[in-house]
Image (tube, rainbow, N blue to C red):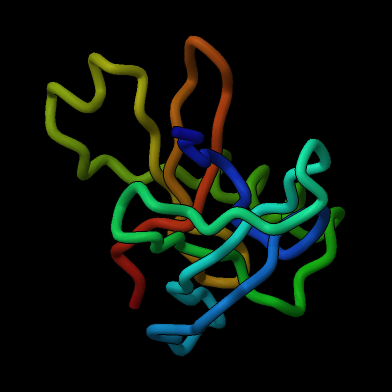
Length: 116
């Protein structure tokens, strides 16, 4: 079984199959599929009920990087001690999107499930 991780934007090989919820800031929850070049077909995400938090559809790759950088520079101090010990971070981007991620073992960033 293939477990799909990453893919928080439609840039690249991600297809949105169904939008489940959209927040005011453009972040949305969607069921997605990922292109598999071995089989030449899309494979539906199955973990987490097939759901993925997505950056706003209008954001380019450069915009995503700028927003992640601004969120990392504007971190909030509301994570519990366990999450902090796991290397998790959270911040609010210039556009008002709450972004979370991990500092290690690799730096990651994704839209938070907690949006205004």
